[in-house]
Picture 1 (cartoon, one colour):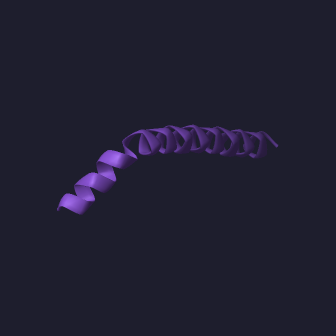
Picture 2 (cartoon, one colour):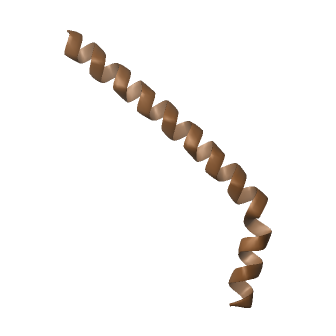
Length: 43
């Protein structure tokens, strides 16, 4: 039972961390997308 609770808590923590990381990456990608596309076109 303790192992099940621990694994469930670990899954919840990992999923929350992934969600935060994806949101952070998406916002940075949206902020920097013109620069990225411009640098891709120039190269």
